[in-house]
Image 1 (cartoon, rainbow, N blue to C red):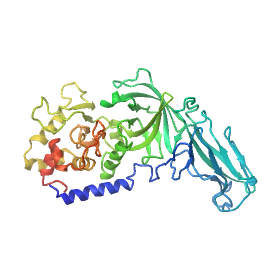
Image 2: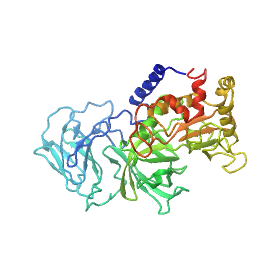
Image 3: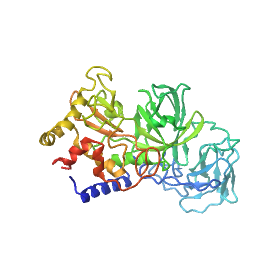
Image 4: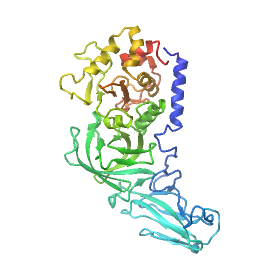
Length: 463
């Protein structure tokens, strides 16, 4: 078994790697910040495809003369409908021009530009929530820049007007926005027709509710299923969240930190580049025209994700739903108690559907120490399962040490692979959102999982 010092070093190295941005975050950008309501706040480090800092079109080729002015209004700027904004216009190069040497085109209704002070002012109305790119021209030099202004819907105002055009409401305080329209018959049992607008693109797709306890929340989680011809695209975030057939919207209703799920996945991805990476990022959801707030956008663990990682899409995928999914045989009617078959053949309920999983669980539970050490690497990707223990020890994932996991196997050949899911019980919070202590010992997770017992006792652990 690794010494406490070795375990501590492993955990610290994982934490530092995640802090550095393991490639599934927002490309190292600073998180958006906001002042109190009534104040417009300028952010830097915007990474969205809608535009970040002011852009410049000099009208010349790459080999042409350098820009003299680079007209700018700084930004991007973010504010709520009804708040007031003042944007000074100037040259980014430091060249001093008078206000009448700039022109601003395509101003939104109610906005005005004062040449005397070289300032754009605006108080957006309650029907003007959108992202605006306003051209700024230094007329003497023919140089054009843009200033980006994002106006957030003041959804809690009694006389508020819902978002008028979802295709133009692409971001909110620097985070991307998904506008989801669901069927009145939406359920967790099967997919129902739905549409979504994201980054100005309209998707026709399907959606269903997901979760267990969260089905009772006023803010649900969802699985979105996109067509083969029109896959979900978010190239700017999570290291390139592109070509997705399924996307999970994870509710933050039971997480007052709003980042627990995302942080856990980021740490898992950073722990080992050979993992089945689950890409995640944060975004805002409007559902059926109503503001639903901050969500974690995530990969869906499915055959599609396995295919992304070079595995057989049609392999067997099992989901650990209860604490009986503990790699033990005692007290069970079958070795696979606690797990359900999500994908693969034979289908769940058919004869021999669980044969490969039953054999794997039986090996972990019953093999002698010598046999376990000699053969474990022929059964599974051992690093996946070793890192599972390190991972739950790091995040104090009491509900993820036995259940809340996926296990994939290609019956045509290949090793068992592991992927985690569901972290509402982690980082010092129970699944019922109560606070708990920080002093749990990693060895304690042996109560939850015989795989951990066998690995920690194995001479091969960590080699």
